[in-house]
Image (cartoon, rainbow, N blue to C red; front, side):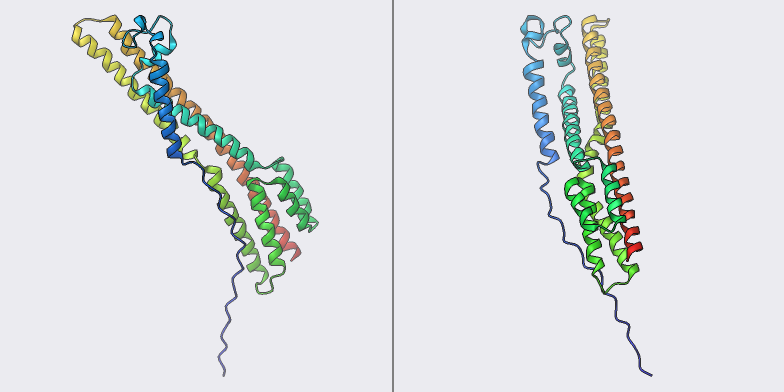
Length: 279
């Protein structure tokens, strides 16, 4: 009795790897530049003598001069300004990036067009729609459809293996797009909590300054007390304001990303179901 050896089924050929995009300026360098800008703004503009009595920033701010009051917030202020500028910069960057990721037209409309073309088995037409749409969802669907075409001529795999290969291609194309969608969101989320803590630190330092002034004089020195409380409130306001911006931005961007991934999953399921129905 002769022994028969089972020949292993060859794996599906991988699709061509997409070209890696340049990461641009590093986030750390951007934060460093913004810190320098914040320091210059704090010392050169807020600390300008025109905001203080006698033209000296060591004196009290002029009555009602907001910039002089903010300057008196102390060394924590430029750190909080850095947090604010960082959140603003990355929020604007994410708005542009996620706007491009959506593509040139409505995602829902694109998904409907591709589903109609798939039902008509018009893969070339669906690929043309991907070229028009562009963006992250266009890239993922384009990679999936090219794999779809490749599998239609593949004679080495059975139907089940082809469906697995198609699903894997969609997952890999999606995973390649996710880093660009989620870039800098970690920084925004971190600033949402860190800015509040830094503001709280400034608040504590301001109150310590007030109590120290009271302890030295042995009585309530209204000027020193007011200066310490002003420092505390300025830092509190900057910390809470920055944190609020970061929280709103983070939740808004995550909702956009969730919408994009949902549409990718929806159209990915349509592609695999269409392949199962036609082949």
